[in-house]
Each structure stands twice: as structure tokens, then as C-alpha cells.
Length: 374
Length: 189
Image (cartoon, rainbow over all chains, first blue to last red; front, side, top):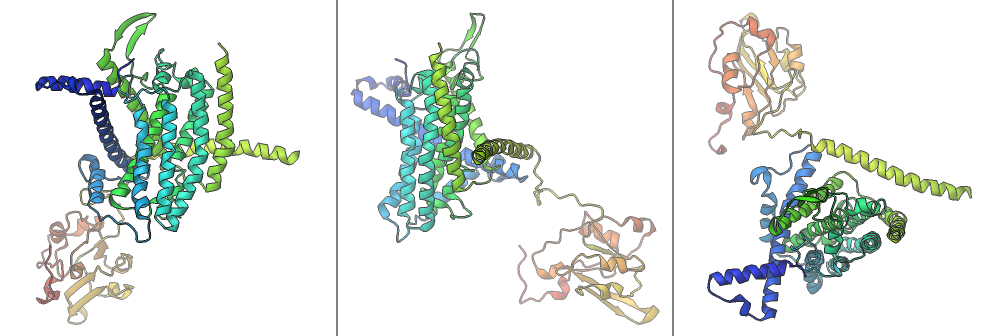
């Protein structure tokens, strides 16, 4: 059994408690596991928050440069603290709940949405040991929790008691539910090729030959097309342009979060960028070789190993690979957003039902036939 | 049969055009992403002004014949000329242009028979009080004053050679003295 993030945190805690003369190992098993999980969760939350702050700034800068503007460049060097300042502004705003809104569901909805977006982080591996839980149904878990987001958004749309919010929520229900199918089909393609639902297994299956054992090369052409299907469908399920109909600002004010402001709006923003990260990271892990990335961890030629990274360096290089590829894919999402106009709702369903689903089935059947060939 | 095959061909055409147009659009935005922004961050950087920019006027008192053509042709009457005496003995008392209203249409400089009025590249007229936008060119030494007031002002190339050490009274840039009234005066930040 390989170490995971909770084990590593517990070992560090044990070592640190030894320094101050306490015995961490004497605590009950349950307490140790729970504290390790809590610390891992807090760390990931911090990571997500910093990520969102960075990417909101990056999005605005990229938008500015694509439109030949400057973008925010006043707060901090190159304006990098802009979204931090915006966040502080939003945190100190008045907490407004509309009179006619359902008070409980209105409060619950942003939490559910963020939970759905954040939960897949449990199984997202940064490298072979830097993963909170190495569960064998990792892909399945991530998919099922991504579906929780739909419930939260519909709840937000309904509880706001506002026609724009309701329209946004309904659009999102139609969109996310239908795009679950191509996402599932393209992931199944990889599952068929690998024979495992465990994300770590899927990645370790792509080891070797620098980048040429990545799934997109190994399972060519099926996994190659499956990657595009997954990425486009993921774009739609993370409500990004060109599929941002649920919050189409020209028609629906702000869609399902029209009535939200302050800290609750922050949670919606945070969950949007978290979903983007999860989709990009899953693309990197499933199709682009995870931590067996462009940065090599083993230098070998002709069967002879010249250099091999140790456990610490190997994990760090692996994490750099995963995060680098994820950031690149997120940048592509930003690039898409400022390139493509928003599509109509019938076009969204057309793309899903007539293009992504049939091609998804073709890739799945093709990959199944591929897997039969020894 | 025919209709069905058309629909089938249509489907592939849509798919192909979606990919082609998507890549074309992405190329355009990528090009702009790596090009320099055209925004000029004004207080920190000044924009480049073309040679034929129609900005704040420059006025040469000594050459002016007081024909008042500029005053007459101005479509919004923002030029005010005050003179004493008649005919050849006329002397200029006040010459001012109200830049709150000026269109920078260039009619006044085109109509001037002695070319004593022309337009410079100065554009930075922002001020805190509306009255400050009225610029008085009364008996000023254009070169000296322009240097003092607007460092960016260019001299009319045709004028540059002809001018020889003129002197003039202290020109008043703004109509402050004229319009100031203690009661309504606001503090300048």
C-alpha cells in the first residue's frame, strides 16, 4: 500500500510532536486519521482559494490583452492583488437575502455548489503519494460529486424566487444533465483502455517513453478524440463560455446567482474556478499522463537508468507536471472564453446529443475493440 | 433519399465548419494576446500626437491685423476679440478663446489672412474649474509663454523662422482674474 497525503501529514505531526516532547502516536487511531484529514482539507481549501484568486486575476488580464487593453494592473505588481482586494470588498458587504426568497435553501445552495466542486479534490492525485484518498472508485466518486453541483444551482435558482434565477437554473439543469453523458462516455473510454477506475492506476499505466505512453498517444485515435469530447463537455458542465447560458448576462442578468451578493457570491465564483480546475486536472490525469509529464523523473536510455529522482523530488516533480498541465488547460479555457460567442440553448443540446454523444459511443466501442487486441 | 443524404452531408459540413471557424477564431485572439495593448495609461504616459493634430491654438499678436475674420467665422462664437481704436490705429485689448465650447474645427486658422493663428499639438486642457478653460492670448509672446505653460506645444514650422525676439506683456493663461468672485470660488484640490 502506498502512502497518501493523510499518512504523510500524520508522520509529519508525529515527528513534530516528538520535537516538543509529546507522543502523537499514543492518540487513538480515529483521532489521528480525522486530524490528518482535517489538515489535508484545510490545505486543499487554501490551495483552491489561492488558485481562484490567481485565476480570476489571470482571466481579467488575459481578457484585457486579447481585447488590446491592459487589464487590472494597479493593485500590487501587475495588479496581481486585484482579486484579493475584490474579495475583501465582497466579504465586507451587507449580507442580503431577498424578502421573497426561501431563507434556508437560499443559504444552503452556495454551500452545496461549492461542496460539489470541491469534493473531487479528495481523489485528484498531484503525484503518486500526494493524494488524500487513493480510492479504487476515484473516477466514479469525482463524477458523482460533480453532479451534486447541479442540485445546488437549481436550488439557488428556485430559492431566489426570481425569474432570471429560475431560468438560469433550468437551463443549467438541461445543460449539465445532458453533458454528463459525453463526460461519462469519454471517461469510460479511458477506463476500458486501462481497466481501472482508480486515478492513480490510470496514471501509473501511462508511465514510460517520456510522453509517448500518455493515453492520447497510446490509445490513438480513440483516447485522442475522447479527450476533446471530455474537455468540451467539461467546459459545458463548468458553465464556461461558450456554454455559459445559465448565467448569460445579456439575457438573464446573472442567471442563477442574480440575487446573490457578498460572501455567497464569492462561493459561487470560487466553485466556478474550482470546477474549471477539476475538469482540467482530470483531463491532465486521464489523458495527458498525469505526473509522467514533460518533466522527466527518470533518465534512462537503452535499459540503463542514469538518474532517478528520490521519493521527495519525484513527488515534487510529479506535482509540478500535473499542476503545469492543469494550468495550461485552464488557460485554454480562459482563451476560449474570450474567443467564442455564447451559443443558443438548442445549439448546446445539438452539440451534446448529435455530436458528442455519438462520437463518444464510437470512441468507447473503438477503445473496447482496441482493448481486445492483445 | 435525396433529402436524407443532404441532411447527412449537412451534419458533416456543420462539424467541419465548427472546427475550422473555432481554430480561426482562436488564432485571432492568440495574436492579440501576444500583441501590445493599444491603451495609453494617460497620467503615466502621454499619447503620440500626429503632426497635423488640431489642439490648442497659438496666436501671434504682432502679426494680427484685427480683421476679426476668425471671430466671425467661428460657428459657436467662442472667440472674443476686444480692441480699442479704429482702422489702422486699432490696438488689441483682449483676445481669448473659450475652450469649453471650441470644436477644434480649424475654420478660424484657415480663414486668417496673415496666419497669425494656428493650431498646436496641445490637448491637455483638463482643469478643475470651467472658467479655467478660457484661455487669453492677450498680447502675449507666443514662444515664451508656450514654453512656460505647455511644454509639449510645438511651434508652427512656417512661423519659426520669421519670428525674431518679440517681447510682450505677461500673458494671462486663464481668465482667472476676470472671473474670480470670492463668494463662489471653490478650492482647487
